[in-house]
Length: 377
Image (cartoon, rainbow, N blue to C red):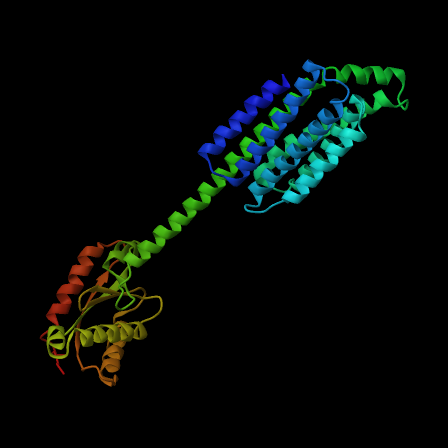
């Protein structure tokens, strides 16, 4: 029964590892394969009844195999919660297997002694592993399986001890013998519980990684959206961001200021597009400096800019526009002087943003022939 169970578990992990290239799965494939080999040697021992000269080798191989299985099992769990980390080095694995092989061949030379040694080691290793992994939420079911198997191993170690010492009463020794006659069924169930814990740990880790990847994708999508909504020349928002801005200010209303640089085409024609780009960047900076940080300044299109200001009355708006004109007149450098036209419209609380935007646009064009006539350098 144990061998059949071990075959099923080993085949399952081989198939799973072929479809999912996780490092911990490779550790668990090795672990359950070694466990299958150890149990197969046990079955061969009982069926073939080897001569006494072969028994030490069988004991050594079995004890070394079961110990290696335990260490590889814990290594897989550790790799799951600490990706890339190594709990047991290859030298330690080989050393532990060699020590247990020596004990099986020369010290634990009787079946009951072998049972004491094997289950005592299993209780210590699995119990220690359960304690080491207890804080890791991702492997809580595996920790439960390791803990249950460790307690069962401890009971089995005591039961085997009752068979080789006189420390227990005859009644307890008889009860222990009866338990040992059926303990293979408990071992099989506990190993399936560990295998299930491994599967659930992988599933939970996979879900966690998918959640992290989804958060990263959402963050990347938000970054792309911000890049798409940002004008690369002036670093202002562009008109793609208007729907979100209008949703934010529509409940309370806002003032819309539509700016247009006068005779911008002549700047490009006379001085070149690189100078025109510098003029656009200079005007964008002057707009930011002339309005409040809470006001939204965006490049609407070409040489057109839009400011959406919340909570400014008309006199405050006029004052900031006058401040902007002063900044543009006082600016020095290699850029040509230029003027701008501005149209102002009010977006009432709950009003239609598109209608307010059209009104600001019409107002801007109506000022083209006003007192601030276009000036070209």
